[in-house]
Image 1 (cartoon, one colour):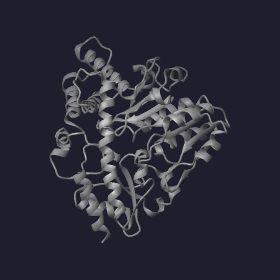
Image 2 (cartoon, helix red, strand yellow; image 1 turned 90 degrees about the vertical axis):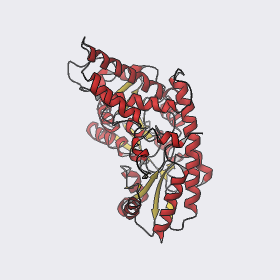
Image 3 (spheres, rainbow, N blue to C red; image 1 turned 90 degrees about the horizontal axis):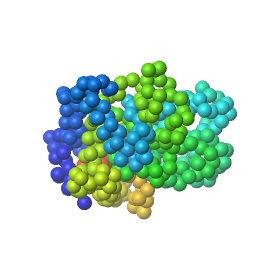
Image 4 (cartoon, one colour; image 1 turned 120 degrees about the vertical axis):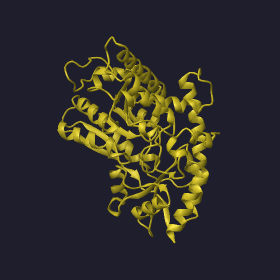
Length: 408
């Protein structure tokens, strides 16, 4: 298992205070090695790419290393399939325009009510421009999982694209990406996966899943604010990007508009190196192998946090978990929980927890379609409690005790 006190020492913010960060779903804290990588780039290398002088050459190497590192994290076949950008949202808007140019009026796209709006609005707006039809997969309101019958019925309409989340940022629900991709491909659809909330909890594998596109953000897995997009090279080659004329015509450069956030990309590589270090293996271990071992540890540890929280919430009268709430479904979720109460509003719960040094968000977390579907949007949303591997069981107990006090 992971040595949590030792892990906390890696994070300047965590080791300097007794505050409890249950706000990881909105963005994780950053280890010192990431901060150092960003500072080192700005102090010693800061330059644009492609020139013969030292700092430019070193910047070239920094971005090459980062691309190779993200390739290992996602298990992509080639570095050229890795695209950096501002964030997942802007990258999705960017690629949606190019995909839209391959569609015809009347073509269908399929979206998910479980998703963050970053994997809904770009496709809706593109569909409006191209006069395409938009369908949504209905969900089971009790479990916040896809309605399988409805999914099959919507796929039978032969959508050209199916965009869905790997893991709900609101309820922590995991989707069966491999099976959903297989079903979508059988229906003739391109698959676009939002793995933003999946990335800090479980290891991504684009080859195993066979998805066509996958997007995530480094600030959700202990890095800086940088977006990442994976695309199958065969598909990227057949799409035309919106770009300036002097920009590269080859992947991945043709998709990375303007000068990138070099220091952030350096920090992204450092965040993945940090994750690999959790394997306990030597630094010479192949990175993908190290990441597999590290995420095995992360998953096992986070399961103990989720189990403890679920057991504790069951003892509280007046607070309900939205979505999967039974221990029998522990393998179908990550330790992210949306809570609602008939005694205290979500906003008030977040405010009261903040007074106790417990950081948690209330609202819809940009999963607005989901909250509207479940009827929580009009009530101000829900309270979200989220754990990652730097949290511990003692913090879980503190949060449960404070929630108990709130009900009084």
